[in-house]
Image (cartoon, rainbow, N blue to C red; front, side):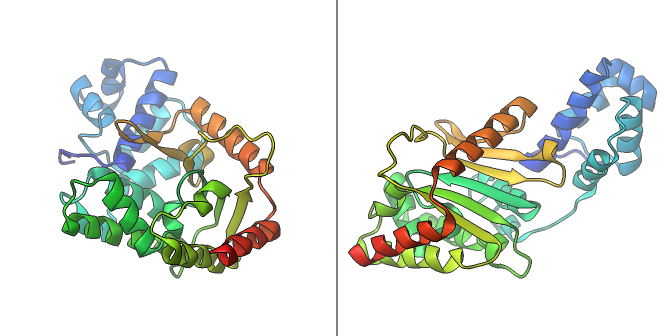
Length: 283
């Protein structure tokens, strides 16, 4: 397989999982390579995401590593052999790599669970709302780049508005709904859009009210992207250094528990819609 100079987050996840399997089997790169009749450098390149791996070789690796989880192996094979050229490819080299990684992650998702505390979730944002966010948080961006980022964000909505939408559940704090990011008219349009989307069978919206007396989850913002097997889920969080993709078993379980805790604190769907309706009327 040819070398890959800039592996995507999905390709890196495959590489990480193969390394984890080898380490769990107690094998060194040299020992793993000997089992495949390759040198340790080739194993290291595969585990760094800089070299691809064929289905046949991947299945041999899994067998050598004593992995018997067939569904998990099949998903790794799907990741290794995927040649999808999605709509996000047109932005490669134009926008930061994380933009393409997020779109690709969404494309392969089986579900998404989000928690939003300060801003409306990206998949719900209107053009005016997203434009105001990008322009304010990155004042050095020229208008053309802001528009590119808005365009990309709008296209990502296909995962919940396209012909084959994924189940989507989001918990939004009332604070995010009350902040007038782009003025009252734009905020009203934004709230109306959330209400419209919340009527879809595959979308669940819950709101954590400001009146809640004991909510300490202001730092719980997350995007949890579900895979075909839970161990391949990914949590995405914004970090000071950029977008963080979280995939360790312990961390994934932590964020699953955190999502359940925040969801339990939120209003049920029908009362959440009532609250959003009330906020809309106040504008």
